[in-house]
View 1 (cartoon, helix red, strand yellow):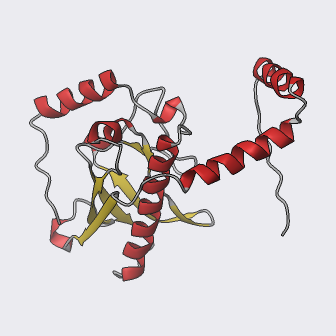
View 2 (tube, helix red, strand yellow):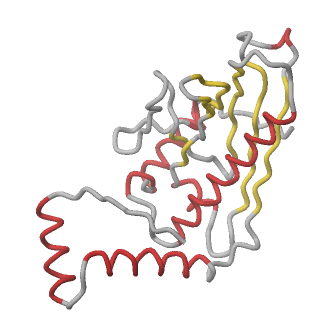
Length: 213
């Protein structure tokens, strides 16, 4: 089995404090980093995820219902959080939309409906591959609505949907796991006041009548 090298950038003050702690205990930074990673992986096996459900549904749009030619379908995801996690907890998480590129060309895109996008400065995540694409989103009562844009000019194919479903489910699952392990950074967690403010804007605008596909 080959080994991989991990490189991490930290501020000078943080690195100095960390090194003083670890080396003061007679450890090396590499030993401690290795131990941290191993402990995280061990902890995953202790989580109770059997109650978590991710229901991914997709519907193609007929050509006469498309706002743009490339706007091909609608994605609806319903998430039931695992034991020990509430819908309120779920609503605080900032998720990241997977991207689908072949080298430098974008094949297709999932784009959150506007009321799910997270654009606050401390939490906003933008694509580094294409302009004006917000990747950060939140769920509302365990739901996420998004549109599907096809830039590959290929016919409808089940492979598109299968690829989307696999990547979306993996992203959601791993984000929830990191949250339960205390490994999600503050930039990926909204505070309750932010959630309540966003929900109030959502309600005052009349909300959205979710349609289960």
